[in-house]
Length: 196
Image (spheres, rainbow, N blue to C red):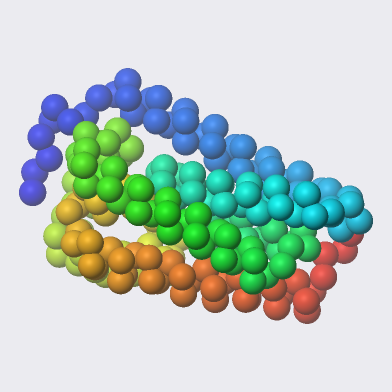
């Protein structure tokens, strides 16, 4: 499938890059603050702080999965577990936010299609994604969960992947990969506690 030239708008692409960079920077700065304030959180965590922490985790997981980002919501799980939050609650909250964000992103991609996706990628990269998807559709969904390749539900919606396939290969694999990853991080923190 050849992508028409009129979908590409360099001004929109520049704005999207700036928004992406700002959101990624906010998440990374919050992660660094959490790591640096580990002792403070360990001592001062009260019920209110815990509740707002879980709300923030949900919000950031939702935003990171509904908008195209190169920062994975899995980073939220790592920071929360390192800060002493409960593994099960963190996993549930981040998964719910991530899945709802996935669904929203998928439907945005489905509704607006190439108009949105063309703002995210260069013409050459977008053409590569479409060509790879036509040959290996389901495999692309699986690949994005277990490799460093970014996971963009908006792209999968624009690629017109069937809803059933997206639910099975996108959302179900998200549950599995986050659960395995969170368990691995928790075990790592138990075996090798943070020095501060």
